[in-house]
Image (cartoon, rainbow, N blue to C red; front, side, top):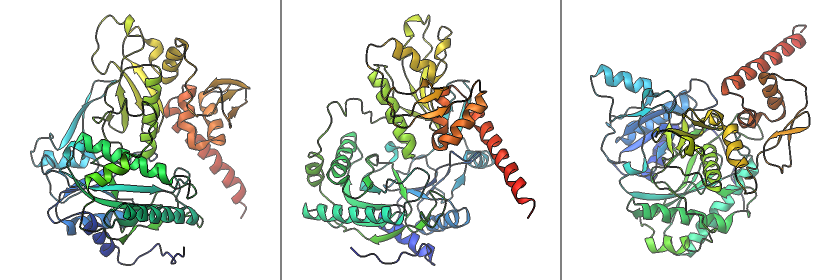
Length: 480
């Protein structure tokens, strides 16, 4: 297959963005604009707003993408007109929205979401964003073809081409199955296929789309390098990249450049039928018990890496028979209220948030039981030691790397291909983290969780390491 030269800078961004909106939406649709906060950036905020004017939406997207250098997303299915207070404005952070509501003497609810911190019990209000129940109907299935590049980086040219090859094969496959013409966009690092549908927003259809995506991925994964279909794009409230925008996933380099997303092909106005979707969904060969613990009431998690962490955490809880409830977002963290494994020692019921497992915004796992008898269950390491030492099952394999201190394993599974070595003698917590930063910086927060080190200590270690690098740099450059 031949490829035209790809220019990452298209002069008329606004025209390309409007083309992307015209692909997905009809006049009068309510659309949420969203820019998820960057968890690795301190004091970063989520941007969100609701629009029913596509021209104003295009202008807002273009401004944020061009001036703020941020990747912009939109809901791909139309949103109900309910609590959103549609005013064609985007708000940078909850504080901005809260200030406007207070100045105009409007109540914070329902436009903002009330939550109670599970540990301190304090009440917080955060900007409310679209959830599955807020979607009026399903108009699209998104087949998101991910390049499978390393986390925090852009795809290489070859990885990007692999996603296009996969996209073309999947579109041809759907056509051979009688589907109307599908839409295709360049998503910057991969490619998106949009299948037009006309389905109610129900739990049954959520499961149908989930199985459809799994079936597509099962058919095509492994044939095009590391390219794969993101199976997590089944929620009705899922957000998608605003086509026409520049994508800033990782730093721009010659080998892994930032690119501009773009509409390549529009879809037919005819919708695929439910029977066509069901036929492919039913071809998925599932693993025994795969859907036993699926909960349609779980809140939507946009961040793919955090979503994978949560799925792994749920698998761990299932493996050790720890009962839990629907996942929910608590600020930037994801919490799973669950039954404390030491509940038999509790003298009173502490409520649904008495014990929670959590994935922090950094990706670190955590656990805490508030009960006085559970002092050993106030962190992730203590929780793991408690449940694993009392179970007759083999140790759950996380596929994490082993952490060694002076050659002795201190955490992680018993099998590992690439251990992290921490070989110095008596180290402070900061020194331990600096060792992990040198060896495996991408997984420093996981390492911290396994070592029982707080996120604050990680940030301190990062600052200390940066200071050392700066001092070394100055000692080399001061003579030039």
